[in-house]
Picture 1 (tube, rainbow, N blue to C red):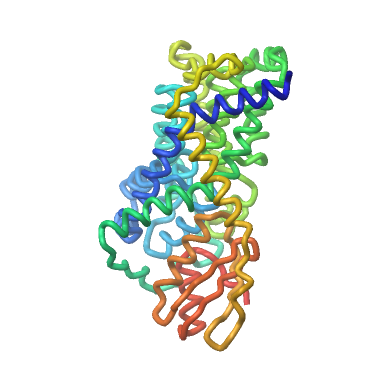
Picture 2: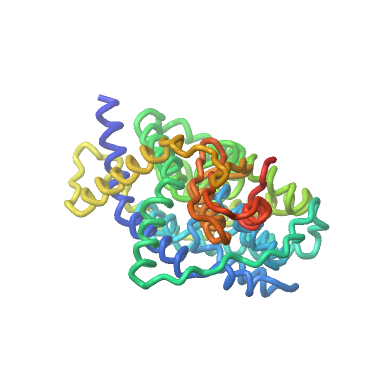
Length: 412
């Protein structure tokens, strides 16, 4: 009986999310293809609060996880973005994204979907401004790379549309997919197996509950979209909307691996400011939701669907979207497991070890950077091995420089 309830609950949550998340992935692909990185960099340089605000506004709609946003932010720094702007971008980007905002609306309702990017904006501006004033110096010089950004390849509008769809529905699904699936499974498990009385006592101490959620969310590390079904399940088990909101904001923005890289590139003082900004903003907005906003605003859209999943009636469109999403997840899982062992090292083909790649976005970032190097004919990045195999007559120095420009580290 519990297993059947688990499957029904899981399917109900997927059907609620899939139309919105697929739309978000498509918008994500459009942003990736049609918004040039050099345009972002041009607006993020200089001192003062203006580049910090711009960086937050740039970062909020971008659907990057915390591992994917790090090399992007490092690359922006190399292209002239200020340290405060880079920190603002780092705070705002992993907490939101067009895909997660759409999915938040589908499961948790419109007020959550509105407050989430507002909180990300406030935290990003506060953290970026604080780093600009008190962040100290970098522990290593990441601005010593005087390489121009990659040349924009001239493509037809139709080709760019296809590239946007490929990035959104293939690369983005591969990047977010594991965390999304993890979040869905955890949500269904909580819904079925966790007794309602477990969180009753914890809800009486909201601040303590929020700190506990932060302590669990950071090492657990789920992406902005994957955290949504978990937050929904916790609310259904008795936790307040504010406590669930802390999970939505703190979990995606900070994890141990990201903080280690951030400490090395931004400095430990700036990293501490980053963590404090994320946690304090999440808790303040969580307390505001619980104490100053009508509780009727935060009744999840899908509470009835999930709680009575055995009797839920699901329309044909959400069903088709769920099947499409499942097929995309399966496809990216299968293709991600394939290694390119058919490429052998010759005088025209060389393999480079790269440190710092962690997701499909990292893979796409490196491939794009290397493909624009003069003399490169073919690039194959193996995410599992952490290598890039390059065919062509490009020099080693230009390849290594392109790896650094992309925000990653070449390992000799």
